[in-house]
Length: 393
Image 1 (tube, rainbow, N blue to C red):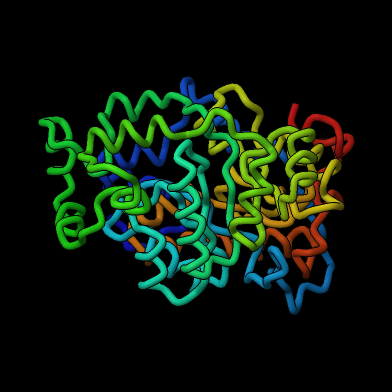
Image 2 (image 1 turned 90 degrees about the horizontal axis):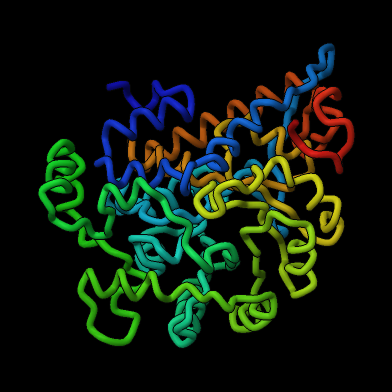
């Protein structure tokens, strides 16, 4: 198998992770809901957009730095919240947070992470963002927000598109659980990956540690899974943004927006930024890709708040395209999980190096020295006749 430093693309990293991670956990990272149509279009719609090459431009002194929520970051990329990073490799979220800190970009820890808020805070030095799901058990949510405050998380990412779970056929067929149930099929999967097993045996972090020990009652694996599945709150509404922001006392980013009216409602109710996201194609199958709807959301709220894009980013070229259509920055989830599965912290570091190098080269070949100047002029004009027209035909 190739050394991590020889991997040249995110796609190569994905293939390497597939070989190194048990099928049930790899396919959790690499799957969408139902037909997976939206999951595929998140990537394919990016490929349909062509860039405008410019030459004979002074390209010395290039800059990739931008700001997110007023903080300088090294490039317009942040790590998205992604569950079960700690099952792609042992202590995965800690390793990903360290890689993000080295790269000078934000890391976002998921509510459904294997490593807890406290685990990451105790084993890293850079501040990290925390992602919140709103659950029926409000006392648990109050405590979760307070734990994020105690860990000095500078921002809260509120996910709005998981009130009802989209069905992912691969997870059902694989019998996915965290920690894994010891069935003949799951044991057989894990036996194919002895190095993964050895690393997992060396850590105490095998389940959803933001939840275990923090909810009332004694829960075994089955009852904890049932509790979690029943807790996503179908009554979640825009007024919840206000009390969550008040409780947290810091900036709140609303994630899961695909509609301009929803983006406006988020801002009207106090969101400090919005993330255009379809949950990586894992919720509403048949929803549009994020790059398709990005321009209309930027047109609606881009002058009032920062707009970020999540879902579908696989390269530095994709980052440039998202910026060209108005995104302030981008989030990556699956590329981070691929990096963890393929090589732990080193793998995530390599993924970020790949994206950074592609971003820098693409920006230069588009005739730009500063990533903050990327715009619609960098897109080949025949692709998109107007910003408020459909992104991809």
